[in-house]
Amino acid sequence: MKRLLKGLQKAYKEYEENPYRRIGILNDEILAIVVARIRKEPSLDNFLMFTNCLNFFYSTRLQGAVDKDVFALKNVNKVIIRVAKELEAAWGENGLNLKAEQPSGPVNVKKVERLRRKLKKVLNERRAYSFCTKVFHQLNSQYPILDARINQFMYKEKFKPYRVNFYADHTPYKVFQTAFQDMMKDLGWPLDQVNELDNAIWVYFDKHLARYKSTKSK
Image (cartoon, rainbow, N blue to C red; front, side):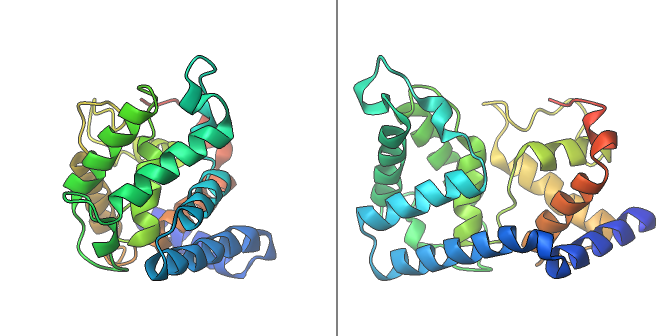
């Protein structure tokens, strides 16, 4: 475990200092600017900018929801508009109230589930779970992101509970969030540095790509 921790700490240092990683850092800075604009003016244009940038920077594959037989989802622009409108509605909506999310504030796992169900419904049953975790992470970095790399890292390093599929509809976000926190405790990583660990895992995963790609997980 100490060896893995040192590897992750080294990876995070590289994330901060290596010019190759600057694009990712600057992408996050752009998203922070857009979030600040939304807090000041929660207009549809700002939510469109946020949705489009988040989808592009983080490869959330919202374009997978394109359905030429459904007018509202006929092309990728319509999908982006559909999702942006849902986020705009959720900004002050009872039960979601996205505007209440603050940097480093408390985590409400039920809100992630509500947005997860809402987007799946409007996207014609297309899952947008990873996108949902990224939305909340941008508003409050204490929400860990679930994506393919984090999922594979946790599986390979045995931080993922046995036979648990984080992506399954019946598996609530709380299961992943708890497993992520347990991983931080096991590693000895500060619990208030969720974003830093996420970035470290991405760099570490890149540097050990062959190892993590050798085994697929659910």
